[in-house]
Length: 292
Image (cartoon, rainbow, N blue to C red; front, side, top):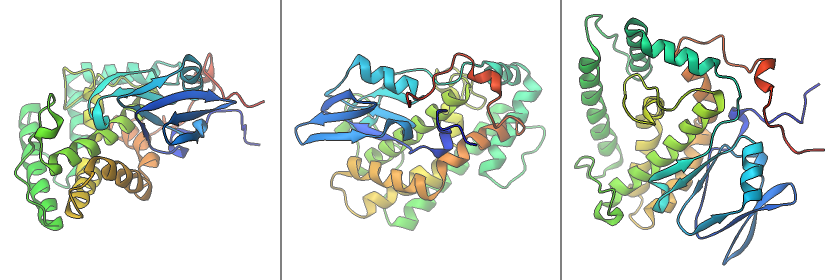
């Protein structure tokens, strides 16, 4: 019999919810978001990621419920683009993080991970003599070509990635749409990584940043999900692109079964296909739902 008191798997959850200009509070055993338009109930047990934008306040009780249900919370800038802080994941086991660190520390194993990541995105088999810098160069060239191809497909004018982190409106609608789509993509990948007990900082292609592994995993899907969604949204009109892209990403992620794919894909690139389920020991000290 299924234990309904255990938290739902990450793959069973909704992708993301963006909130701004309101108050997030506990409401009975769930949550409610209050703003000028009224009160919106939020079924917390089904959420994988909550993005809190400007003008949002959250109560201590709400944060406690979010943590108990293994929901990642990200405090973001306007339109959900700039990440300021986040909470921790839901597992209490470190064995996946230790394996990830071991793979990174061994140069040969690290290059094997890099090759598996590359070949999940591109059909070409990499020559064995290539180093990490050469792989990055090949990846960059293929990605730039992919952007041009997708832009042509949707009939939009793509002049390259141009944005200013200090001035959101400086970018054109296409770049703003892409920033929003990427933000949703990064947030969900980040939530999945923490949920399974990996480190978002230990990347293999990207290195030196606190979200390096998030960027590695997000790149597996960016040109298939985020870029086409952003370009198609702008092709349909340049009004309210940020809001429309977030809704479009939600639909795209659902149709592509994105939530089902992330953790198996991470296990595949780390050569850990036999480590997809939680072992009994991982529940030691872990939060469970508040259902009676």
